[in-house]
Image (cartoon, rainbow, N blue to C red; front, top):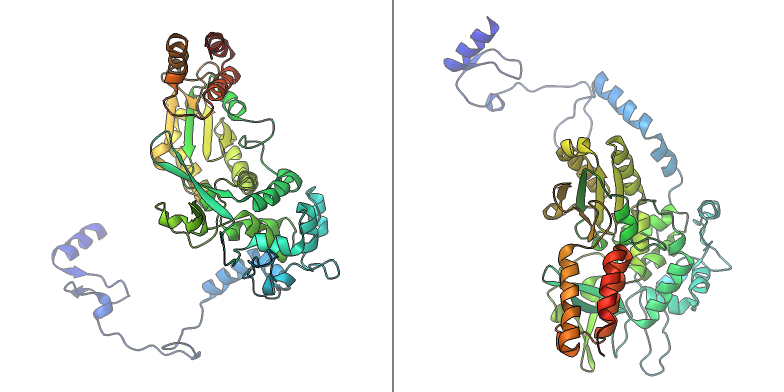
Length: 460
């Protein structure tokens, strides 16, 4: 009966006022009808009109919210003092070649006499990391002076030569287009390599990460997925640029390092692509004048710096842990090589692939990253299954296409000589061929032996 009355009310133009009034004709909004002004016993002061007092249900909801946020309130009882000016200035005196005074940042991070009060030695020691209580200790860790460290951590203001610590190198992508690498200049690269050896290689990393780790490579990551019914491959979009200065400095703070140390480490390992320079003749010009660059407002982990892979692996540790747990619930295995994530399992995983990919997407997005949907692949046993370029259907091997192409080059070198086959103008064509054969031998030893036999017949 109620349903029929509702239908006739709609049919004859009557509808019930959602704000509690009687049935009314017409289709004008109920908010447009004149409403009597409400008065409240309490008239709080605020913007605009009076605000009604909270209902008992609202008060209970607020109480529940604050009960679950006790950890945040406890953390906020001891607020950190404001940081001094973090703009790093200074540079090289063009007349003497000496480093100039770095400015207000010189006092950031403490000294041996006055260590950083926010340094947490117990937390750093528990993680097995080197103790860096002040900026002097960081400078000693990488083997430079304090002023040199601060100068390398920021953009120098030199009046001659390059005023950036990075240069841009363009390399061609196999799929077309170019990839721009930010290559640090020698002084900064030496400091970054020291950081890799003495700090970054000791950062905690999840076992699912196979990229840029000693004893692991594309073969170790692909071997996990051999002989599976289905292989799901996903790609993270803009992997290194997603790790900005704030994320890197915040990560080092979470390990127990002080604010000044975290800021210095983030400055040493991040940079803006638009600030990099390219040498043209005897002049240094900004890369934006040579290459078409995207504009980023924050520094990021540069592609081409030795510190970027290790830091990105460490920051992704929580994401890897969550994705590995999700894979276990579906009876699957998970590995990650830089921005390439791979899952493999039985037919059950294939059946739930859309739901599974949706859950992976939510986890990746909650970690501040995004997937490149164009590179998502669901590969069943009936087709070629590839993981980071390695075929894993029955055993690890290179693809037949890559093998045949390299075999044809070697055969042509035997028949016509090697000089006419260097069509890509490799400076060391012999070394390039040896590297390709070594890669094939590492992944598929049987095919590698066949290629090595052909290489030995070339007359150099």
